[in-house]
Length: 353
Image (spheres, one colour):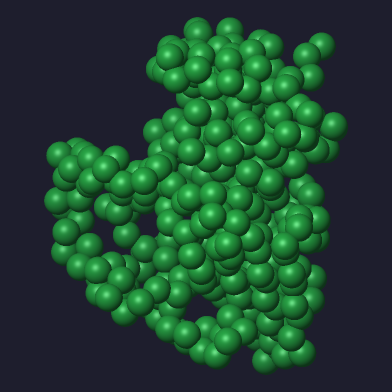
């Protein structure tokens, strides 16, 4: 029986970080992707086996997965790629992990929980920066206040930039607008309209609600029915988000999204090594209950792409070692709220209130 990890999209910015870290840790994953030339070049450089296939070719995908026990899917936008990969994993009896942050993907995979249980396969999306630290923070706060009915999460990045894959996934999500959870249901929130002041540890900062993955996953992890996620952005970014409300019909066209993706392609592939080393992220979490109870906790983590490589790889290693539960899972449900504290550079602080 195989005990192999297959990394699909291994030559992308984040996939490459994970593959290199795997080799550094003494692992020998199978590298995979749809571009034979880029894949072969990477495989020679890292001394690893590889298999090229497109997710559009179902038969080829199924053949490739016969040699794997776990797939770590790193090729987005996941709104287009997660379903064919999950289909193949369910058929082949291979556990599925990915690094998505897309609400639509989390919800689609959650809807396949019974199907996955019947197949004995685990569907574990979001094992990167989206959503390991915030998911663990949410679950930790639920432990601190079991009666919580409202969850507020905040994120503030310091340094670095987004990769092509992250930006392209964001472009695909633009027509969908903002999201929050109300009484257990996902609801539309016009981008740029929901704001608050959040203290990440250096005084209150303006933040605006965003359709972050935890609007979906934190519900499954904690059962808290009302969830909002905020990002600390300059006011100019908020106005830009508000403008997208009026551009949604245009952004829904392939031509407009294609033009934006061409602009992305002209930018650096992702943060530099120095940006990864020096950058960090601050996370804020707050829960409240109907009786006036309140708890606040904060996290400081390494730069998101650096952290993603660490959390995604350790998640895959844990699953290979037998830590798997068939069906749809979230990181904190599978590994526990303290999973994020296992990584170097992570600091968690619990406040009295």
